[in-house]
Length: 463
Image (cartoon, rainbow, N blue to C red):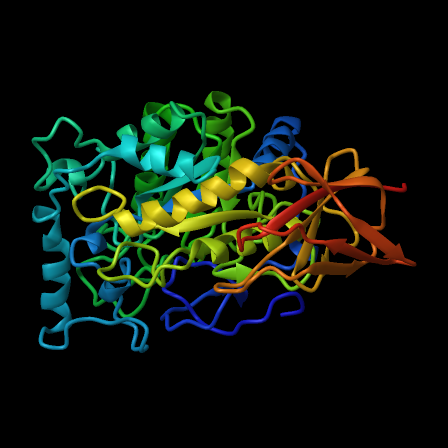
């Protein structure tokens, strides 16, 4: 792992190994992030244009909501029988009984307070610009009214609610707020008989039979998967991103080329994120729970949870607003986008501690977003707690000084490189600030009376 260091493992999405933002007690397995040398630039001009538009957004939300939300446990993985300590389950039940209990949550998942409008308003207030919603996680439970299975929220306890086709209403609410729209879909499906066939035991995350001995089973699974992707891409409005998880099933396994060819006729420029599968259908890379060590000048997105889990869990230890802001500054300075993992409650709302933290992030972005949105990288991108971004002209730079929780602002901020010419402005109030230059060292005088929060400065540099 040349570019990435793993410090902690995570509740698995099937994501890439990364530097975590902080040591935290989490469980999980991660795929290694694709290497820089593995990135393949798209040749489709519409995809390139869509990627450029997506790179302007910088900040999004990844919403995990499913059966696992009902008891507030790790998403899907407790029904996988692999013997590792990050897959927890009730030790009082046999594995077979546990799976029956878990799948039976379909008849208890009744989110009567489901309010996608609230979700969209909270995320818009936070300054987020794109959304990725889990239409189906590895457990196979569909958050949309699929024609190809009744294992969905539309056929469980919520079936008589007019909002039962949950994904449709989620996408619609965010689309109405001007968000770019991403559809998360798990290629593996542990509920489907053509993936985990009931004739055999389920020893691990993979299909539980040999494809060459049961080619008809695998053919049925491929058709099932393609059909579900087709109905999502056909019946649920316009999409910008197809975000495919579960990298032990590859795009080649399900003929993703054919799926994308058809989908892009309806969704021109659709971004394909075949996560951790190196090649032409991984249009951007997805390091998990942290940030690459160095700046990467191709499309990528850090996926980091607001709590320690992707879905909702009770009494979650949420990260502070300042932590989110500092993380965003670092990711953007290194060339990436930041998708924040948030789990709605079993009742179907975003809980108040999340609302409060995200509101503070949004307040900061309303004052300082110029240093984040629609920016690109600059060669000197980091010095201490200061991160640098650039306007697309490359002449206007932004310095973002990040503070840690409980830290007071210093009297001065110093960095090397990115020497300003002319005036420097504090974005929070639009006022000029004093600075001096000693060779390539820049020292900025911090105005008195400012709140103890991250600061962003705008200035020009010599080309």
